[in-house]
Amino acid sequence: MLLTILQLCRVRQWLKNLMLFFPPFLGGTLFSNINTLLMLLPFTAFCLVSSTTYIINDIFDRESDRHHPDKFTRPIASGQISEVSALFLAAFLLACSIVLAWNISGTFLALMITYLTVSLAYSAKLKDIALVDLFCISTGFLLRLQAGGEAFNVTISEWLFLSVFLLSVFLSTGKRLAEKQYLGVSAQNHRKSLVTYPAGFLDGIMYMTGGSVLVTYTMYVISRHSSLLLYTVPLCCFGLMRYIFRIRDGKSGDPTESLLRDVPLLIVGLVWVCMVGWGIYRQDVRYLIQYVN
Image (cartoon, rainbow, N blue to C red):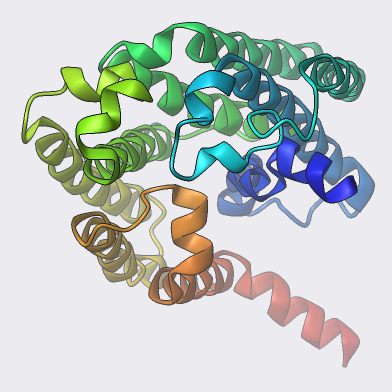
């Protein structure tokens, strides 16, 4: 039963909530607060509220999921968990997330409620409207970014905001394109927006936003005046190209699945974290080594 509940909550998708740590990590303040428990509160709050939205989404999509080649195994669609039980679980998770968010700040709570509202509107109707569905997904990432800035008292730079916005549109477009390729003629039975996109449109958007991400990220690292960060631009370029390669090769476009299952992408992601971390925190590491010695 526990595994079923974890599947319903889509625990793997919590990886997206690491976006909350981007502002303090890139701002050089991630380790300035040594209270690990307080650092985890924002992440936990967003994990709980995101699971709430996933449960509600599965309730909305239960009929179409039952006819989907992969999603028919989801707990609600397969009948492993009743809709009533799922609603009770969603209400409990939402209540816990609100309590946690309230203890962080009123602004953080407002950002989280906005995320919840957009996500529920997306599940109810907006996911069926072409382009609007892409921007709803992107809004979710931007709200995570802003919530991270609020929780850790870090100002979001213009170039970072644009990079995350364009990257989220790039990833959501790739996901839609992969779905359209995978489902083929049955796409309209599972997601109405897929059939309204003209042939080649999603490809063009993916290429356009991918190139834009590379430009805005390059401007971001240049603005940081760090030569080491500049060397992460080729990693960004490779990661974008690898994701496009996966999509055109017929593989899943889900960002979480792509990162966890694609070894080259995972390696590039880990190397990027190490290089950025060393570029930003090397002075702190050297000071710590000297202090220990």
